[in-house]
Amino acid sequence: MRNETIAIHAGYEPEATTHAVAVPIYQTAAYAFDSADHGAALFNLEAEGFRYSRIANPTSAVLEKRIAQLEGGVGALAVATGQAALHFAFVNVADHGGNIVSVPQLYGTTHTLLSHILPRQGITGRFAESDGPDAVAKLIDENTRAVFAETIGNPAGNVCDIEALAKVAHAHGVPLIVDNTVATPILLKPFDYGADIAVHSLTKFLGGHGTTLGGAIVDSGNFPWAKYAERFPAYNKPDASYHGLVYAERFGRTAYIERARSVYQRTMGSVLSPFNAFLLLQGIETVALRMERHVENARKVAEFLRGDSRVAWVNYTGFADSPYYPLVQKYLDGNASSLFTFGIKGGMEAGKTFYDALKLITRLVNIGDAKSLACHPASTTHRQMSAEQQRVAGVLPETIRLSIGIEHISDIIEDIDQALDKACGSARLEAAE
Ligand SMILES: Cc1ncc(COP(=O)(O)O)c(C=O)c1O
Image: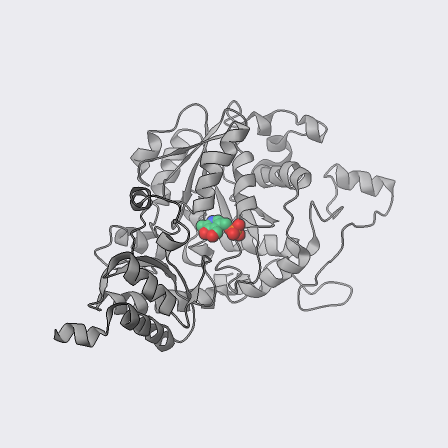
């Protein structure tokens, strides 16, 4: 099946008792056992079925199957948020003493997780100088447990060379974990290029309506945990917390995702509610169509901005002069992301005036909503940093990050145009001067 069809049908057949066509919301904490033996078989992971909704829930299970199929993976785990998914994805490969080697262009909170929070648990995040495979390779050592990258970085917009990063990771016997939130499996399927694990914030393009937080981890089933038994003892030695289960032996290709569920979801929670799973499924039904319009609208906005004399620069990877243009062709089939940044003439004050003048485009720090969204990092997300720290993070005083939605393109451009008028005067007047 193709993306459009998977997004609507995968993981669900009208269920046997009521024949409900919509996926039912199984708002239940627990599930009845037929007998003591049935309960024991479920707990021993010998029988298929549900025990308790912290571990698995039928509504979330449909969401998991749908996302797994969209990514071309062997299984998925749905969790409460993208951040919970990232946390579980990292601790599911690295114990105390391990390190994760990452590209530097990351969503801010993921950067914080790797640079401040995981180190308190003895897991270090190492940041390469760039997203290039050589820069990443330099940092890998015998304690490395994974290479990590965002397929499209938020907010930098960089497109990672997944195939090259996967080669580097595999040459050192570690998996490549990618955050595929911004690209979505509609624009890019990282497993086709060698990535082993994909993580998502479902809060963004996949859910698509800015109503519901959610996250997912997807397992390609391709990483050979048993081959690297020394590096990954948690997969290859009996697990005392689960009566001696050896994950690689018992589960084979689904060892990673089964361990994420049995070890982390079971003991730490971060559960997605069935109602939220239902809402996210509604969003996913239209993701392929929405992504088409996001991409098309963003290109028109980027072209409008590039042609406007009030705009200083536009960092859009769909332009042939972007260093990421060849990777956009290779990995995204030319469909540059609807997340990009630009700067207007006049520095911080002009940037703020532009931002405050927006009427249709919403001022906030989310991305991937059907609505067009804007963020002025220098006065909001990166406000606490010095000017130099902001520059290193890729934030200039005038930088505006746009996440272009699916409204009518003329309404989006008219809003940007009137806000530019307020910040810099009309383009026609300036051109006449
Ligand atoms: C690329 C990326 N990954 C992960 C997250 C975290 O997702 P959530 O807000 O669902 O926890 C975000 C949030 O903005 C993001 O942009």
